[in-house]
Amino acid sequence: MEIGKERILLKSIDSTNTHALQLAEKGYPHGTVVVADSQTKGRGRHGRIWYSPEGDNIYMSIILKPPVAKGRKGLGMLSLLTIMSAVAVSEAIEKETSILVKVKWPNDIMVSDGRGFKKVGGILSEARFLGTELEFAIVGIGINVGPFENIPPEIMDSATTISVAAGKDIDSNDLLEGILRSFDNWYGFLLRGHRKEILKRWRELSLTLGQEVMAIAGERIIRGVAIDIDDYGRLELRLSSGKIKRIDSSDIVHLR
Ligand code: BTN
Image 1 (cartoon, rainbow, N blue to C red):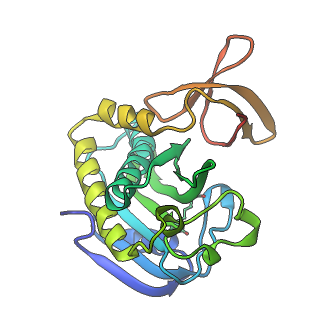
Image 2 (tube, helix red, strand yellow; image 1 turned 90 degrees about the horizontal axis):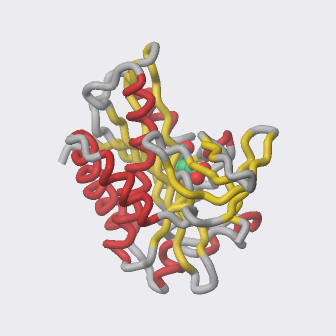
């Protein structure tokens, strides 16, 4: 297995993504994984804080150096990596725990708590480009595994943990190993050019497709029905005018 062959295990770090970026710059190889028990400056998407206390959660970042990724292919590769990561993580959680897992676009990992879906994890992909060439990517994965007390009060309504959803204690180390195996498998698939299969699996896991959503893209609010994702992982919305609008990177709210 290439992913996770080299591992850096830390008690605490500012952010495993920041650390992995520094290591990748120093020449650490493809597949290196940085894992921490806690983070003091865990980062979420859109510059948000990722609350990262100690206590059986997963905080890890994977260094990826895809072989050929020039020009448009570099950007395309990054978005595919993000989609692929959500698929790999979701499948691993399903396999290790038998919980029903869904993905909220672009890559929020959601599980059912009986009344609805709540977020258990997220993925932050970052990359360094040399011009248009993708030099390396860092895929950061954060999963709430431990007790519900680990969830900060502000997000208690919208978030949960794997152990709470499973109704029993789930070992975060076993889950981490499962995620790395699944990641290695799906990454191999991506390298062999099975883009369509990755997108197909993402569509099957999607909680967003078919839903009426509101997207907040910078200052703009767009409302429409999510009908598909394109080859670059962009969400396609059908507006009330019938027009199709592609959303690149934003937060969405499911309206129903
Ligand atoms: C999101 O906003 O949903 C993405 C959250 C990603 C959090 C993980 S935890 C491990 C890695 N290190 C970070 O600082 N962030 C990611």
